[in-house]
Length: 89
Image 1 (cartoon, helix red, strand yellow):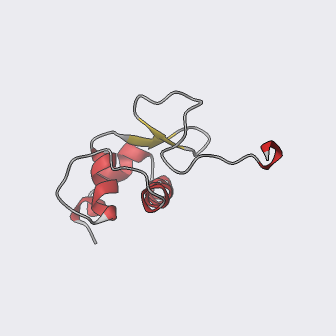
Image 2 (cartoon, one colour; image 1 turned 60 degrees about the vertical axis):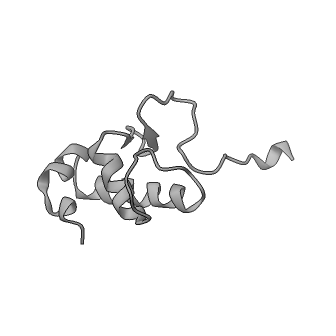
Image 3 (tube, helix red, strand yellow; image 1 turned 90 degrees about the vertical axis):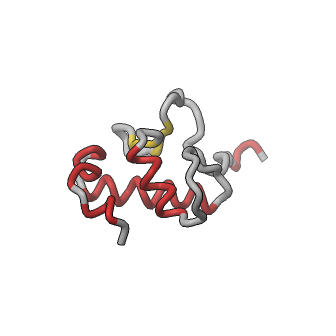
């Protein structure tokens, strides 16, 4: 377990343990789908990348529980694969 996750500061920053877990899960899915890291750290450990993104205020959950990146507009993608509308096919 990462030491940063033992700190209450990161839990309080996100708004609770459930929100922290949700944010981590959603960002890990995005990274595993090919999204680029938003922080420059020398590691391939995706969990460490996500934790640093949270600590550096690069990602957050909006009020609807959607993963957002700092500086991102409300209509922008959440850092994962593009949404696919089957009606457009």
